[in-house]
Amino acid sequence: MSELSAEYEASLKSIETENKIDRIFYRPLGFLIAKALKNTGITPNMVTVLSIFVGLGGGIMFYFPYNIKFALFGILFLVCANILDCVDGQLARLTGIKSEIGRILDGFAGDLWFFCIYVAFALRLIHEYPAWWFLFFPLAVLSGLSHQAQAAMTDYYKTLHLFFVSKEKGKEFESSAQIKARCEHMKAGIVKFFTCGYARYTHNQEKATPQLQRLLAVLKEKYHDNIPENIRIAFRKKSRQLMRYIDFLTFNGRTIVLFIVVLIGHVWLYFVYEIVVLNLILLYVVKRHEKMCSAFVKEID
Image (cartoon, rainbow, N blue to C red; front, side, top):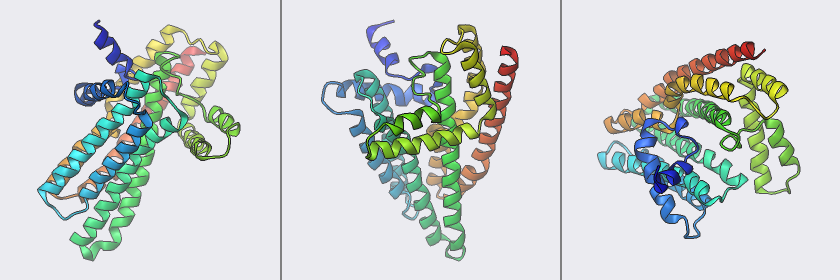
C-alpha cells in the first residue's frame, strides 16, 4: 500500500461503513480537500459551520417555483455541503483535531439541511396547491420527525459497527450513561448544553434497541473490554449484510430520490418517500438487527 493510500484510509472511519457513492466520489474528493487544508490552520469545526450554510442555501433554492436553474443550483449546493461534511471528519482524523462540540455539530449539520428543505417544500406546495395549504406543514413536520428517527438509528448502527472493528475505531460508541457522566463534570456553557442533549439522543437510541443493549451487557460482563476477534468478525459480517438497507437512510440514499423529484418538479413525492418508504425500511432494519443481536446473545451464553 502506498503512503498516499494509507493516509487516505486513515482519513476514513472505516471502509466497511462507507457506501459506494461515498467510496467513489465524496470521500476521495473530501480527502484531497482535507489534505490541502491540513496545514492551513483551518479547523474541522470551521468546515462544519461552512457546510451548514451551504446546505441551507440548497434548501432555500428548492423553495422557488419550478425552474431548472433553481433545481440545479439547489442540487449543487447540497452536493457541495456533503463534500464539506466529508472534509470535516477526514480533516479531523488527519490532523488529530477533535472536539466534543465538533462531533455533535457534524451529526447536526445534515438535520439542519433537511429541516430547511422540508420547510421550503411546504411553502412551495402552499403556493402551488393553495386549496390544500393545511396539509403541507403537517407533512413537513412528519417528514422531519421521520428523518430524525432514521438518521439517529443510521448513526447508531454505523458507530456500533465501528465498535466491533477495533477499540480505536469504536471510541465514539458510548452509552448514554457514559455521556451523561461526562456532561455532569463539564462547566456550564454551549458544550455542556449540546453534550447533555446528545446523552438524551443516545438514550432514545438505546430504548429503540433492547436486544442490542442486552448483547452489549452480556459482552461487557463476559469479556469486559476484550471482545474476542472471532465475535467481532462474526458480528461485522452480519452487520454488513444490513448496510445495504441502512444506506437507503443515509444522505446518498435519500438524495437520489430528492434530486429526481426536484428535477421533475413534483416535490410532494419526496414527502411520500420519506414518510412511507424510508420509515418501512427503518422498521425492517431495526427488526432484523434486533433479531441478529438476540441470536448472538444465545450463542455467547
